[in-house]
Length: 258
Image (cartoon, rainbow, N blue to C red; front, top):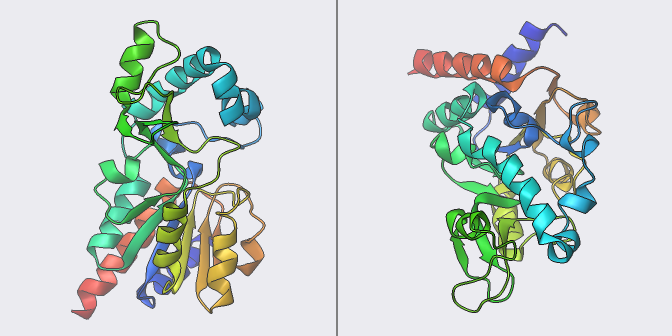
């Protein structure tokens, strides 16, 4: 199938659906200058060992080294801006076609693009959380302590250790987050996978779950995924190059039908 035909088919799938959920991964944000994790040759985890720099055990054992790495990678996140793909998702929601977003990303670019109803499966980089009492702070509270030389940043309430409010390797996803995700997809009739390799669990279960109750699956991702064969449409291109075109077709058709 030609690319233009795939774009048209995806637009028609969206037009024929009433409860669309987007599942977004690192590939959604690479065009905003944030490196992904697993792309061959360029992925972050090909440069550093995630279990040395992004696991909860290594963080507690050596916060100094881990925080230096996190501050450096955080710079790209904090200066990033939504790209054409993020903005197209927001436009799709304003057209009444997008129910919400499940995202693996911690960059909050969907928030910056003013998309609503977002479930952050892996937390976010804009908050810090006490590992003892669970109190959540703006990330600046933690960063300010580190910049002053305190590489064991502590909670102002209980003096417990602070960590970025993102899910580290070795940590489970929060139950309330999983409940919110399940609630979002229970009535989903089309799951749009945008920029996710679908190898991280439990996120990788969601396409299988929606297929099990008759919903449809569409994927835009540079790399192949294990779920490609089950999808109605698969496009291996950059999201920012393709998805705005899809949404434009949808918008034009909605206007035409009014």
